[in-house]
Length: 142
Image 1 (cartoon, rainbow, N blue to C red):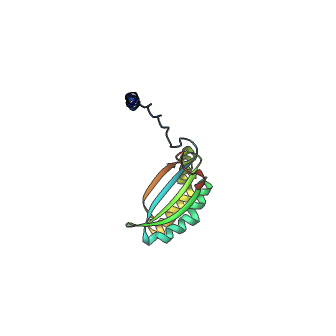
Image 2 (cartoon, rainbow, N blue to C red):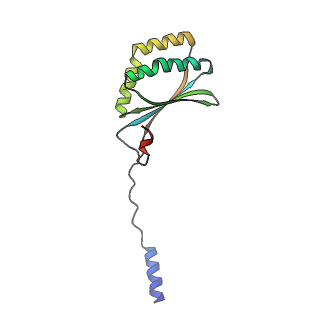
């Protein structure tokens, strides 16, 4: 009896387990995307930057279909940063909206005028396209 039980346990442990199922990609390939933009701004033009973004850029972005979720200012060792999050129905819409915004003659005139008055506003720009993972609590980001 003991020998049969021991042999059964040995054979059970020596039998290979079935291979784990291949995991599916958790990153959404369709549907909405978010875009995280981080601008390195300068202390000496920080207030003018915020005025330009609030009074002009945000208004023109809305005209071109931008959905601004939130905006923040952060501070790093290098200085202040302006951070904002955009929501897009898909990546193609994002690309087309940016092309329209950057080609907008009103935006070009505002940039020229504010640069002439205040100098350079923005240093490095980081741009990240974010795709939801399938285990994200979708309700937390509108």
